[in-house]
Image (cartoon, rainbow, N blue to C red):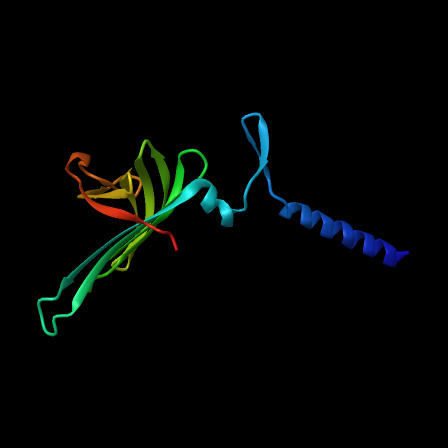
Length: 169
């Protein structure tokens, strides 16, 4: 009898665990659709990748070629919600690695990034514009806000780096 109870309890436990792995249902209009697991969301909401690589020659010694790169990957989630990565890797200098979350409306994006550069961790505002097959990342003078996040001082005086759309890998 005890063996039967243990087997029945194990079966219920396994069935319960399997039910948790089923896809959640979300309401879209008046219909109900299964959501796609996070690993597959890239295709549904659209992951977009952008890259800028600048090459040049060093002015010293062996005249080797230097390459700077900016990588910006963005994935749109529900509604206007976005997240992604922003990596700036200048030649022979410290790199900046950031992950961000924010929103995009009408091609204009605003996010807060968790950044790491020159051995420091900080939060900063990231502004960008999507147009055709390019993404323009803004840059300029920043100041730390009362909340500890670095914001652009004067948004009318920002410069931008234009990145080209590339295939995501």
